[in-house]
Image 1 (cartoon, rainbow, N blue to C red):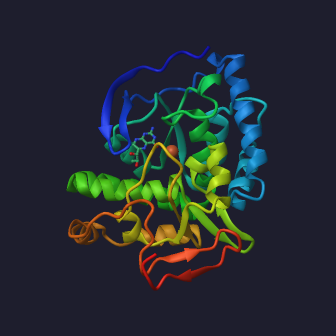
Image 2 (image 1 turned 135 degrees about the vertical axis):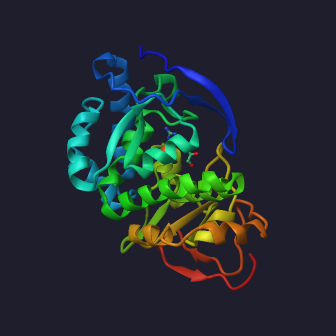
Image 3 (image 1 turned 45 degrees about the vertical axis):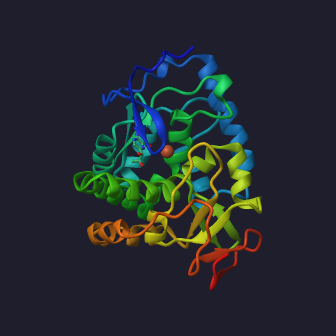
Length: 296
Ligand code: HBI
Ligand code: FE
C-alpha cells in the first residue's frame, strides 16, 4: 500500500474544490512502491497502450519507446531524466500532487515538469479526480521529448507567471488554453485525427469517445476561441480543438497575451458545446474539415 500523500488544503478553482498539496519537491521514493503499485501501473499501461494504437499521435507512441517506458515497473524519474534532459532540457521533479498555480507555472517556466510521486489505488483504476503518477508520467511526459511541444510548455509557464500578475480573469483564459491543448488536444495527421492531450491518453473511455462518438465537436485550433470556451471537469469534453502541428501551438504563444485578455474581458464566454459561425469544423471519420458559415 503506498504511503498516503499529505494534503494541505482544498482550493476552490474552476475545476471545483481540488486538494492542493505542499509545494515541496520530493525525491521519487521508488523503493517504497508496493507490488500493488507496480501492478496498477502495469494494468493501466497495457490497457491504454492497446486502446491508443491508431488513436494516439505518432510522436506520443514513438516517444514512449524512446523513454523505454514499459508495463514491467513504474519508471524511475532518474532514468527518464537522463533521456529528457539531453533531448529538450526538461527535468521531471517529484511532487505531492496539484500545486498552487503560480508554483506550477514557475516550474514550467524553468523546464521542470512536476510529477506526482504516488499512483492511484486499484479501486481508482478507471477514474481519479486529480493527477496521479500515471496521468503525469504516461500522459504528459512523452511529448516533452518533442522540441516544439517542449518550447510550448515553457512558454505556457512564462505566460502563466505573467497572467498570475494580471489577475483571475487572465488566469481563467490561460487555463482554458492548457485544458484544450495539453490536457484534451487533438492533432490532424495525414491518416486522420489523433490524440495528444494527456487527459485523454490516460483515460480509457475518453480515448475512444473523443475520436469516435458523434456527440462532441472537433474544431480547428483558434487561440481566442479556446480562451473563451468554458469546460467541464466531470464529464467527457463536449468540444475538442484540433492543431495542425505542435509548432502551431508554440507560434500561438508568441504574441503578448495582455491585449488578448483585454479583448476577451469585453466578450462573453462560450458554452462548452456550442459551434459558432467562423468555427472550422472537422468530420470525425475522414478528419477533413470545413468552415462553418452559419450558426449550428
Ligand atoms: N499542479 N502538479 C500539478 N500538475 C498540474 O497539472 C497542475 C498543477 N497545478 C495547477 C494546474 N495544473 C492547472 O491549473 C493548470 O491549468 C495551470
Ligand atoms: Fe495533466
